[in-house]
Image (cartoon, rainbow, N blue to C red; front, side, top):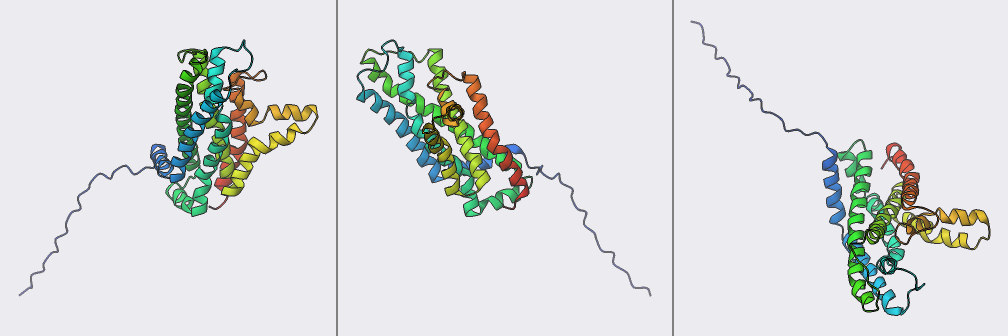
Length: 273
């Protein structure tokens, strides 16, 4: 008799469609937004930005009875009161710009970010885009809040402006744009140096120390160089300038961003995290 041979039953694998696991830039943006908004330093710096913007505007109005040239228009005076805090907030946002990128290098989290995004550069561009847009929005809200607080104070002194005036809006939006651009300059300095203290020192030095040093040098070249520094160029976006038109000031500021963004991107690709 021949023994019966059992044939093993092979279960057929059920083919199921695999979810699209491709890495999208929108996903990187979402990740960077979560990182930015969940940091305590971000919330505190935004709160300080609001406090300085409103407080400096109100202090300026309260401490002065006359506002410069009597022929100066009410719109210019209102813009000046709402924007005066930017002189201090440019330093505040520069600190945040450095922290956004250098903080990851300090904690080692950057390795996880670059492991998740092997091409590396999308991480840098996503961080810059999220930080730049959020800075513009927060800065604009802070400037409008300062305008809302100082408007009735100026109105009581006979200086009435109209928020619907396109010239007023242009300067207020320009101030927020300057904050975003100077923040990006600091961000890419931080990406280039990869060290919080060094990045903050370099960014603050570019905005505050270098102009002060150049002001002591009595020479034509130092005067011209000082006019092209980010702090001087950017003030033309909200205070007005006799040297640069607003569109020229934007181009110069973008040039400063590019000066630090290009080497930061190159070194991110070539150096280990």
